[in-house]
Image 1 (tube, rainbow, N blue to C red):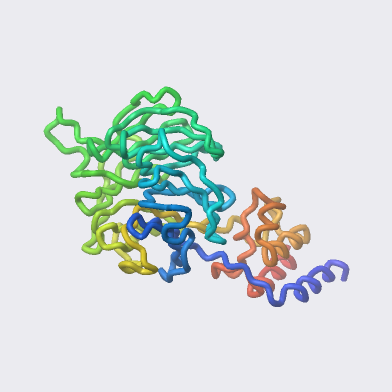
Image 2: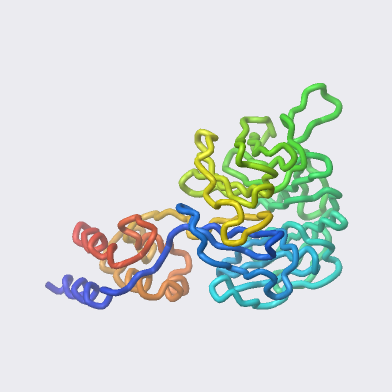
Length: 362
């Protein structure tokens, strides 16, 4: 009977608790001067993560999400990097202000999360900052830089809208390592299959998907050789600027020309729908998109990350249900989605019976 006692207590104290864990889209609107939130499944507008013009935000052109959930947003017109709390919509602070920032247009974080890489549209410089705002130097200069992404091997992937290419640079010395996707003028064949004014891109384990802004397409290439693989296109997709691939194989693409987000099935390259309709939530000119709460469960019921489900997981389950921030602090390397036993996108009382069944079965 001793093992039943904590289960009885569990059922008693959690009867009214619920933690929402549904995947969301954070979309940066250049023309709406905001970052908006949407339900990734239904496209329902969930409010603003960063309200229009907050903290002096003007022509936001890119953002990334820090490990603690805060946003760092590039404000191109004001030449600033601003940090916001998306839960309170409040400006937390100014990360960097003024030169050498010159119309910052894209940014990414290093693998350790302690450095930022910022691309200037004004002069093509790719800058390195510490997350506290200290300027650490210029990596390289690419006149038409439109997107940046640092790989774990210290290779900096750069979208170059001026030369219609995706290039790889050494992040340490700034030297060009190779052109990954490029229409070599010395060859009679267009190896890029029409890539024009590339904007945002995302990497899969084996490929790279690139927004071809001027041709209204997303083009996929082999991530090692740059060989063309296939095209994602739709009459609803106009001037794609950025994209994000979810854990379930759904590709979300910002359509700048229609101020919407178009959804594709990655496996088939077929359009699913326009998940965020034009100007929904006052979104205008979407230029960057990220998915949050997208990590799938690894071992359902394993809340202390020991690889099994046992009574040792009860405290973690209680925290996940009642205090998700407390859970993240106590179990920083664990996946809170393991508490979503019913797999409905929420951690709620609906998961208690399933959790108890897993405990009894163990």
